[in-house]
Image 1 (cartoon, rainbow over the protein chains, first blue to last red):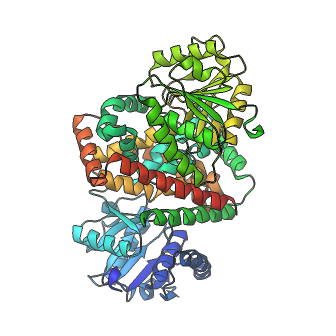
Image 2 (image 1 turned 60 degrees about the vertical axis):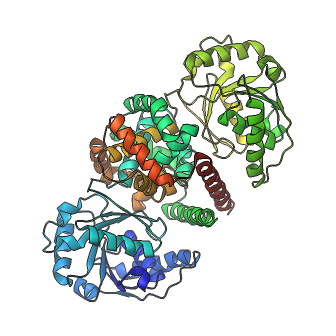
Length: 308
Length: 308
C-alpha cells in the first residue's frame, strides 16, 4: 500500500452521495473503509451506492478488495483511521463542531480532510486543538469518477501528504496557495453560470440551447484543456502573449458587457420550465446514469490520449 | 445530397484556420468547395490544412469526395455557389463591405453565412441590399471537429435552412432568439475567463493548476452536459427547483464575490509565465495536435454513449 503513503485505514464520515462515492473509490483501491452516518437507512443506501460505483470503477480495472464496514457510532468508525474524509452537511456550526470532535478522537498523525465546497478552512477548523492536520479536500460529483480534488492546507507538509494520497488514487489534486470562497473550480463554474442565467433572463436562447452551446463548444474543449491554454492556442503562432496584447482589450470589453441577473421568481420559473423541456420527462436517476456513462467514456478516451 | 437540402456547391471566402477547417468539413461530406483568399500562399496552406483535417475526419468515417478548388478572384469562387461561408478577418468595415459585395454577386436564393465571433449581425449586414439572406454562423475552433454552430438570422426561414444545412454536416446548430455580442458560448467562456484571470491576479493558484482544475472538474462534466442540467442534478431528487430554492442564494452570494481583474501588464506577465511553465517547452503545433487528438477521442466516446 506504499502508493498511498502510510495510509491503510480510511474513515468516511457522512455517507450521502459524496461520502458514498469516496468510499467506493477508496475500497476499489484496496483501502479498508470504516463508514459512519447518523441518518437512519444510511448503511443500506451506502451499500447500494458503493456496489453500483464499484461496477463503474471495475471498467477502469480498479477492483481492489478494501473492506467496507458501517458503524452507527462515530467513535467506532474513526478508532483506527489514518485518514478521515468528512462529508457532513454544509452547515458551518455543525462542521466546525464535528471537526473539533474528530480532532479530539484521532491520534496526532492522522489527517482529517473535509469535502466542504462552500466553506473556508479557517472557519471550520476554528475549534480544533490541532488545526494544522485538518485540510479541505473538495471533490466534484461524483468523486469516484471526476478526478479533481481541491486542497487547502494550513501546513504545506500536510497538504503535500494529502495530495500524494489522492494522486495515488488516480485523482488530480490541486493545492490552493491561499483559501478562497468556492475554492477554484466552483468559482469558475459560478462565473459561467451567472452568464448562463443572464442569457435565459435576457431571452437570448432556451435553457436547452444554452446547455447545448456549452457542451458542444467550449465545454467540449475544456475537457481537453483549461481556459488559459485554450487562449494560448487562440493566439496562433504568437500564443498567449499575442492573444493578450491583441485580443485582451476585446475580452475586457466583453467582461463589461456580461450580465448580472437577479435570480428572482420569474427567472427561476423560466429555468425550471427550460430544464423540464430539456429533460424530456427523463427522471433524475436516468440523467445521472447518462452523465456517469458519458464521464466514464470520456475519461477512458483521455487515458487513451495520455497513453500515446 | 438531399441531406444538405438543396445545397451542393459551397464557397469558402477567407482561408485562414477557420475557413480551411470548414473546407475540410464540407468536402468530407461530399460537397464541392470553391475557396478564395487574397493572401499570398493561401492556396498551399489551405491544401496542407485540408489534407491533415480530412485524415482526422476519416476516423469518423467521413470520406466524401467533394472537390476543392482555389480561386484567386472572389467572383470566380462564388460564381456557382448555393452557400457561402465567409471567414474574413474580424474587422467590421472590411466584413460589412465584403458581405455587401457577396450580396451583389450572388443570386437571391443563395445563403451567405459569416463565421464572425465578435460582431453583431445587424452591424455587418448594414450595407447589403438583401440582408435577410445573410446569417451569422459562428463555429468553434476547429470547426471540422467542434460541433457547435451559433446562428443569428434576420429571417427565421433562412435561419432554419442554414441550421438544417449544418445539422446535415453533423454539427449542432443553436439559433439565437436575438443577437448578442459574443453570441452565447463566447460569453460563457469570457465570464469564466474573467474569474480564471482573477484567480491568477489574486495568487490563488498557478495558471497550470487553474487549467487542471477546470479540465479535471467542471470542464470534464461540461463535455457531457451544460450548466443548467448540471445544477438540475446538483439538486438531488428535487432537481433544479430544489437547487434554485435552497442553493440559489449561495450562488448569488458567490456571484457577488467574483473578481473583476485588470488585464494589466503585471497580470499579463504572470499569465504568460504560467503558460510557459504549463506548456513545458511544447510548441503551439504540438499543443494543437494534442488538443485535436483529445477532441477526436472525446467525440468518439460521446458518439458511443449516444448510440446506447
